[in-house]
Image (cartoon, rainbow, N blue to C red; front, side, top):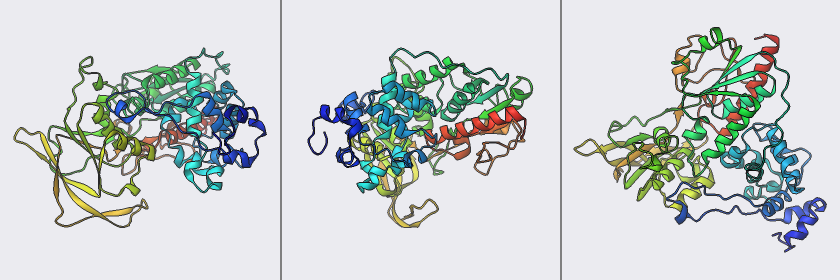
Length: 491
């Protein structure tokens, strides 16, 4: 309800006549969520999404700035004011069509994209109200129209452009690969996506839990690309099943895009990491999500279950692992982070949900060893207290160990969530593909061109572990460069 207590029906009747002052007076619409006690033991989604009334009211808050600062903050360039205007006018079909001009995964990005750090960060309304939390809820509106679209009869498929006769191989079906595939097929090229796993979606299916991103949504978005003409091949490990050189020289592809992500986990490098009950978050979430360990005994995927769990890290992946452990039956989950809450890189929403569900935060503490029992199983995580010193290269205050402050945290399961690097399989079998000291593929930042003719790359394999929407932006940028290369042959 607006702050002047105007009834919603009256507000909607006058939606196109509201003055900027009246728009600013409308409070941000809350997102309904399932209660923590109800959701902490199941895999159903937590936020429930806007209904039509609240979506239109939220859309009425947009000031439609001429400069469109929110668009400048969107890595894929969605015309945000335009799609919000269409929601305000009740044209939900037009709104989702406008989003899909630039974003082939709106139901995904509407759920997991950190809008508060990107498009919403630049919102004029938030700046006018001097409160970043008063930004127009762009992500929630995007989710609304994407969900509205799902379940309805698909519109007539897009008119396909004339075939160019050119073939492009996309390696990896994560956000970067899917985004590149969607753009390239619309340009008339023949596109084949190769995926190492048996399911398509990359990190969207193996890394992000069901309660944050239902897999049926990813399947639906992949299905739309299939309708456009994109071919998908599962269980193809590029670098082992087939090499990049073979794709270009024997399989007849004219260009290759590498969107293989960052699936190689980083570890702590402390004693005891070889004990039974130590997982990387990557493996833990893959077993739980992609291999559906949460459906035991219906699905007999092996995974250590424990009453006391310690998760090391402070990002979104750490939150996902901690919340997943609760859903797999843990009675006590402690998240260990070496800085304070202020420096924690996870989204505020994810931190809030984890706390609501009962995850305990042990801040300013850092593991120095993992302790085991006589059978080789984890029994505790040895930590040292930390204090914050001067800022480091990331701009966050550097944690410094407090001498003599060691203590033991009882745990039967330790999940390490401190980051990931690129898997070296594809690059190690392609000697002329240049990588940096961290194993990331070196590219021209403007085009995604690699050191090897005809090969482009983007997403986490270039950036390191980043966000879904940034990876999608990389895929779109590379698609444009691939199209130019295929048309001109210039490198």
